[in-house]
Image 1: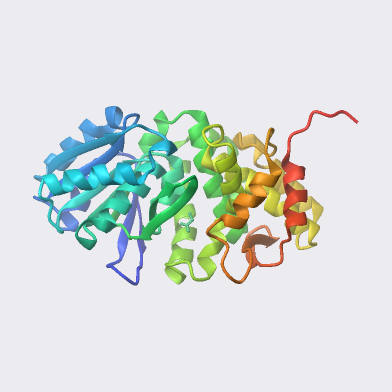
Image 2: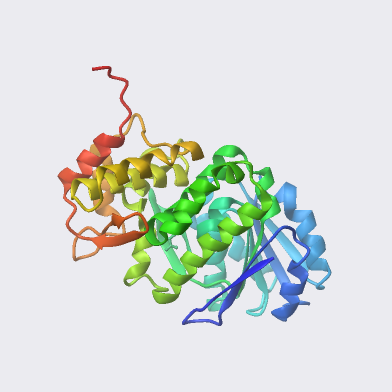
Length: 366
Ligand code: GLY
């Protein structure tokens, strides 16, 4: 079992527990003195049938009375309406501020349950139990919550820090390959932006990671979460350095909106990372060898480095509307080297267009 404590400015510090089963959850709940409370478990219709009963029986040991809410799995459910349904049940069941909202599932579940938790009585106890690699390596840590609205991802939301993040890495065994590598992209991102040694370790551990070797996954998550911890502790509300975590996300989010339902978040982040690395190379910030290495090292982890049928004009239009734009110009995350990302405000539309052309799949044979 590994434990990382994340400091926050707004609420008490919280622990991220990384372990190989649900057995230790009862002790964690006890440590937080949450025994005997009511708990709303938010999940989706993929995850709930697999883990709900086991989770309920662990929570029963802490004398916790559980109410379940399960929504249709997928990004399409990440709406205000789903959050309203969660809040309706909390009102109906007379939840108190001291009661718990628990997210059991992937990133969509955590973002929505966290948003509901932040709204109800101006904030109730929030526990994240991520079951996907994407949620474990990134979204369950750091307090970003929210929903999509009018076709724009995460445009409504709040920073709301969890009281506990409990990662049972055994849940990764049931993920399909595509979902597994989808989450891996965020761990790789952490190495690329902040820690060259972690990036190299990921590549050296390629076979163990792809085989989902339990100790390797625990170590990978520990190191990935620790990088995220360092960044979010320095800049919890993203007024500065936290934006580095958006490496690959500026174009990645826009590609994701364009190919909604076709490509997964981590796949779009991988494409966005290739595009951002290409811009870094074109701006002579990294060498061509570094660019090609970064790009090609995504391939053994089954992540895409090219994409077909993209609407480049639409993607550029989406980027300019994206919330990462502020009134000082487009904020882009580029690389000075592998392991060192920087915020850049000089990327032009032509540079973005060239990067999108670079990742556009073409079967032309010259
Ligand atoms: N996923 C990026 C962040 O938490 O800031």
